[in-house]
Amino acid sequence: MTRALRAMPTLVRIGLTEALAYRAEMLVWLLTTTMPLVMLGLWTSVADEAPFRAWATRDFVAYYLVALIVRNLTSNWVAWQMSEEIRTGAVAGRLLRPVHPFAGYLGTHLGAVPLRAVAVAPVMLVVLWSSARAVLVTDPAHLGLVALALVGAWALTFAVFLCLGALAFFLDKSLGIVDVYFGVFAIMSGYLIPLPLLPAWLRATAAWLPFRAMLGDPVAIAIGRVPDAGQAARLVAQQWAWATALLLVAAWMWRRGVRRYEAFGG
Amino acid sequence: MIEVAGLKKHFRVHRRPPGLAAAVRSLWHRQYDTVKAVDDISFTIARGERVGFLGPNGAGKTTTMKVLSGLLHPSAGEVTVAGHRPAARSPAFLEQITLVMGQKQQLMWDLPPSETYALNRAVFGVEPAAARQTLAELTELLGLAGLTDKPTRQLSLGERMKCELAAALLHRPTTLFLDEPTIGLDVAMQVTIRDFIRDYNQRHDATVLLTSHYMDDVVALCPRVIVIDGGRLIHDGDLRALVKTMIPDKLVSFTGAVAPEEVARLGEVIKAEGGRTTVRVPEARLREVVGHLLDRAGADLAVEDPPLEDVMRKLFKDKRAGP
Image 1 (spheres, rainbow over the protein chains, first blue to last red):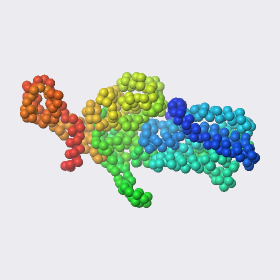
Image 2: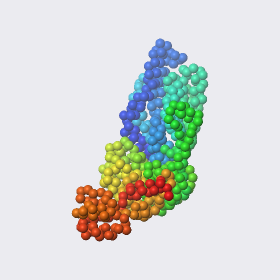
Image 3: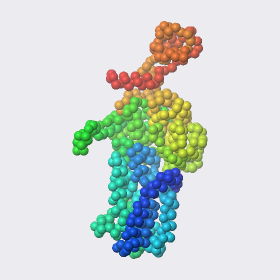
Image 4: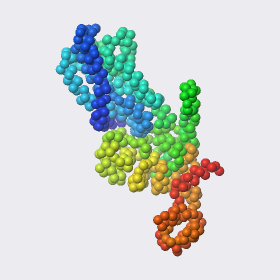
């Protein structure tokens, strides 16, 4: 652990260098996360006629632009990376280093965050100069919670993708599961439709799942849809609990997977 | 120090006959075969030894290497490397060893090797001054100057392997598992890598276990060879003794005008081209043949052991034919 912490600045720096080397790929990757803009077009045309369940046009603009920012800042490709490395046996290189492989993955993907921030900076400027600005929270308590929720969403998304990546130890075509995951995520996280606009039974289901904490909750806190700071803090606490739990699950899956790899070979 | 006692590594492999019906049946009734990749082998390698690990494809060499480096758990048997149980992959163990696989690289493809060195320095906790000193030494020995700041993808195969070795040795391991480190390299580069391995072994008293399909690597580097076939150990000992036991002949080559019928009397003609003739001579007749040739063909005469490839071929053939 101490060794991993000592190595982390170097791991993050190399992650950033790698992200810069793959800047074109990252730009293409970011372009695949523009679904909120499509949904924004759809919903604003609906809301232009009249507010939809108390959501006016500027609410939709704020929701989807902030969703785009959260999604781009918190996403990563660790599941694909792990799947490739496990499938080709390249994971052996990580197993022969005296730090937990998760530390290596963490460094790589933390290193990509600054580049992601630069890529979404124009969207942030649009948010600040558009009608969306009017609904953003401004009080320090909520701003602090937004920051915590963003970091939590990053950690939770990373943990989820570590779990999905570790599936490659057990399944030949584990990335198929990732496709299924995206379908569920799109609905249950608020990526496609704001959670308050979902049918009651879907909302109730989403409340028991981690997806909303990956996107919908941080967005809701940022655009003032959770005015009670105590309630917002509870959502952030739930989010961090999910992140911790899923990180433990990922570590357990990794341990099981490596045991299987050690038994059956790469 | 490497100690292996009764090592077995068996894999359970799913078997499915061809065809749709078999594919459907395998959904309910999966059939498995047990593949004995390594089957009860034992050996000990002392600190500082250079040992060739030989065998045909699928003999179990890479599996054994992976067990020794902690990547695979043994199915049975005891293994200790540098005083550690490899399967635990403790940091103290990983700091002592390195595994270089000629067909798999650890260098980051789109970044210069210097970034992989920085990564390894950080994760192995090598002090910056020590890393600089080691890198300077490796740069000199391997001729890395000008290579480590180019993206890995722009390096030639040989340059990549040199950089790969430097990455693998930055933490100064005392036990080197080298699995085909010269595969695909041209002869000059093979010689460079061989010289480097010998030098590293001597400077650091490092233990080296080497697999290679290039027998020249083994002849040049390994006084001792361990040979396995079908997962079982079939020879462990001095390389020269093995050659002598398996093929107690010498190859005598010479130039000069010697009548064909006279050459045929000297021994079996192996090669005759460009005015140079090579004959295989039983060791018992060597003195007589060499004396005769010195009188007839002059001083341009060489006596060599038969190629290790021939020795291996005979060894595997004999073992498969049974006692």
